[in-house]
Length: 267
Image 1 (cartoon, helix red, strand yellow):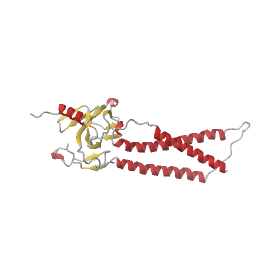
Image 2 (image 1 turned 120 degrees about the vertical axis):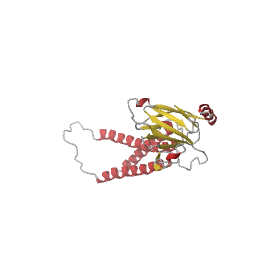
Image 3 (image 1 turned 90 degrees about the horizontal axis):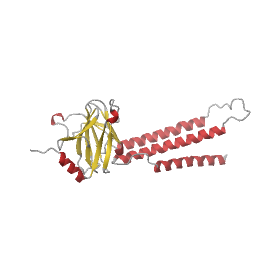
Image 4 (image 1 turned 180 degrees about the vertical axis):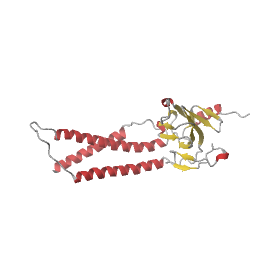
């Protein structure tokens, strides 16, 4: 009996060890390119490890059962009648409940660290002076104390079937691509002109729905120079699959050159 317990403990430890090794050494996500990315990846790794433990554990149980309880030659009757197992029922009720509770609390912590979702009257720099009471929703963003020394770069995003348009109010021009400087907090006000759309950048680990009649503020800080896809992740019509744009993260000098080339010249 003691040897069986040791074998069971060794098996469980091996499954957990293998799951942790795979979880921390096999990366299934795209490259991290924003401040939000490492925070989100923490949660993904935990969920991935839990999933691996359950998958490998259940696979071992199924394979063991196939051999342990297989039909023996010459056995024509039914198997042993088993009815109820209070200890087992308590185990498979308590352990999943604890796991769900821990994951739920940890998920809330991650969500809170990424900014959460809260209704506010955001006096965004792009709101007209005659509409200061406009109700705006805050999407996933950094906390207000992050990058406190950096002034936000405000950009307006219009989503429509089947394109994104990016308005730079300070330069008084519209672009089909979203250009931003690296390591600077970006604040975008998003509005839909028709149906529900979504602003999804996988490398930034951000995805925010854009709902008609509900302007939404989304804050993020890109940390890696490059060109990344912006994808609409809400089914918005027959050409939904083609609703894409690009976000180009540049060094400050390159961004300034691009901005100065496109901004409206005052006469």
